[in-house]
Length: 227
Ligand SMILES: O=C(CO)[C@H](O)[C@H](O)COP(=O)(O)O
Image 1 (cartoon, helix red, strand yellow):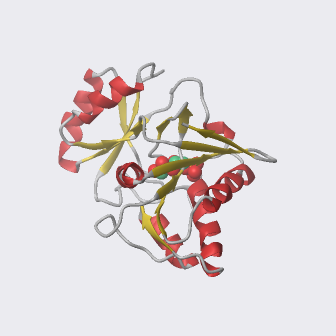
Image 2 (cartoon, helix red, strand yellow):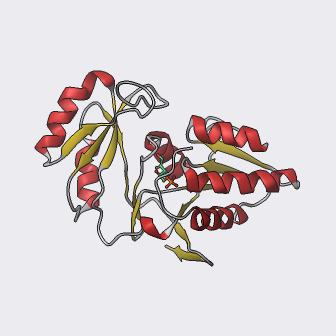
């Protein structure tokens, strides 16, 4: 499984704490990445012990893991999540950059549809100001105009290359991914609006105003912030 660094122990603590928040008879958004995977495994153990939930996966990764640990799956067509649990690449306050696993389009759909969105992370994800690249899922035929639009916004887009395949990453939805450097992002909400208006850029990885709770695992505890 791809991991974006940080302490695995801290991620496990955060994931397990998030799994404790899930109530019987509810629908849970299942995020993507190594930290969300800890939550999914912990939920699997609770299901084995009798917890009745259904999961809405955000990727092949989370769907496969949920099946493996015995969590019944559903879709947004059938039910909206009571709670979604997902990781992040950078966190500023309650805003996030996501998409390190190229799953941010479905993650944003599921996380924003949830009644409550809980972010799980290790301390390396918390930063003063966003300075990481912003991932964008892009229609394959829109690669050039989207790159030009991103440059027009002052960004430096780079097509994400696949690690174990020649050529670019292709998302679960059959699209491409740009990672776009903007340097320090002082006004994420303004940039999010600009990115959302680019034709052919299907979804960007800035999650502004969506998270309700941030759980940051450390070496010996979990720090919780609620909005
Ligand atoms: O946004 C994501 C996938 O698209 C992940 O949630 C994000 O990359 C964090 O991953 P990890 O928990 O492995 O550090």
